[in-house]
Length: 630
Ligand code: COA
Ligand code: AMP
Image (cartoon, rainbow, N blue to C red; front, side, top):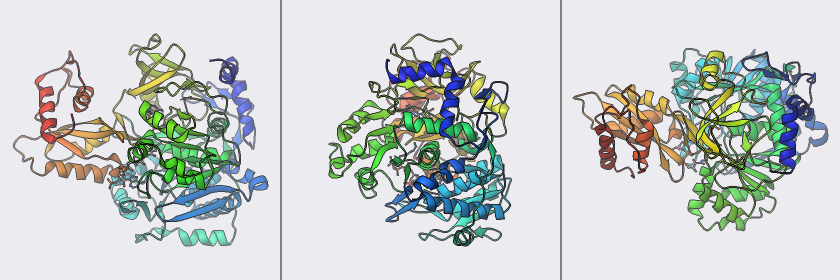
């Protein structure tokens, strides 16, 4: 691959420290880094160990002089019929007001703040207010239910919880207070909660909790300001919980300094977006895409970020994305393939984009799940701009493999997110940890150290970090994805190797759903797999074995409701199938991959280690009886 990309990779390989120190020039430091990387610190080393900085100072304050009147954020909400514009000066005032309120409540440097808020501009300001005072925010996605919220409360042990009164979904209001109150009953900790009331639904504030609005409005009216807390580049800026193999979510820690350096580099070199342009990540602030590309990256470079409270279809139609691109002159759009599949289903001929003036749109970026070639082709034809698949994880915070549009557009191979970005030495390893030849499927691993922004550890748990990511292949970070690299160096990401499934771009643990199923008194055992779905990519299907003698009447509906209540509606858990036994290996491991193949109607080879081959016939028969597509 000749050209700019090759030159940049060569520059990074020759001297990674010099490469990242140069990238660090994009950030305003309180004490600039002299050392790029300390290999002796932390679990595998730490980035910019001697530097001091503040994220809010970089995302807000430093733009005031040149961009005070430029839109920092445009909230476009078809769900409430409103559009709100905040300039950088507005954002500065609002971040300071929230910061003043949080300080008054005693929140300080290093304290955790759980944020349970939907896609409203105040959520962005609350996150930045935490960064301003050195508090570590942990945003919990609004589609998560009480049990998941409780797990995050217990792990983060926050000093404060900031919640909105509700989220708004096309089907109606999602009241947050009952979920929050239930979570506090389930959790071992019970931090104070402040609620920001929304007009659509006002929460009944429980005794001991407070309304945030009046405090915030008073601070705003008084134009209170709070200085930016000097933070070590290695101090955490946030924790974001993500699904792992066990039922217990992993608290991915994000460094303050490395995060900013990597994100600023990515905006220029991957997304090719300049200060002053509008960037739209159509995701949710509850996910990593939202953290990196709704909140931090666009603001760090002085771009305008679009905060969209709506859906790809139905709000009001499949032209909504193109309407937003036209209205706000979006230069680059980033979404999950599932959103494009949903749009393409309603607009198969790709006619709606032409009804809007989207001439300013230079590229569509896709991530969060595998981008199937037919979705890519639909988008290329409909939008007539490059459609760029890129691969990353909550753990990294930015793309591992991408097509660096800002540097040069490499030839696209459908099905491949293209090539590794600087900092990532991607390897395909056998289960024994040996590199495999080109075009051979294996475990996708990244040679240590990971580049800036990638997690240094899991919150409060170095041992779990090592066990989950570093122990499988010594010297490498294991991504838990399977894939291959072809003879041209293109990376292909095919599937997860753990029990994580991807439902409409949302990363979910089958282990969590299995825990919920087996906690039902009638269920002895369960297995949840991600069956293929034409829109959502995967949807969970649960298989349950019942206690002998109990009645199965009404149980399937009850279990569906239980998962919805305990995990959340976003799991889209709609299928439970009762089976007499689960197929297992002789060592007792459930053969989930084989069950998935049967559910997807694919051919499978009988696993050599299967205990009882008849169990597979039971799965087949139960699925047929259930009516699930085979
Ligand atoms: N708060 C509360 N509930 C939420 C929610 C939120 N933030 N987000 C979703 N839900 C609920 C929905 O209301 C829905 O509930 P229902 O079962 O009562 O209908 C359920 O969770 C599933 O929602 P969703 O995933 O949005 O599925 P859908 O069938 O309503 O819509 C798509 C399908 C493809 C349009 C939708 O999944 C989508 O927009 N996907 C894009 C996802 C995305 O951007 N991911 C970002 C990762 S990078
Ligand atoms: P999350 O941490 O929620 O961003 O999910 C990360 C996981 O989503 C990865 O480990 C992959 O399994 C999957 N994923 C994300 N982007 C892609 C992509 N472009 N192609 C294939 N899989 C992807």
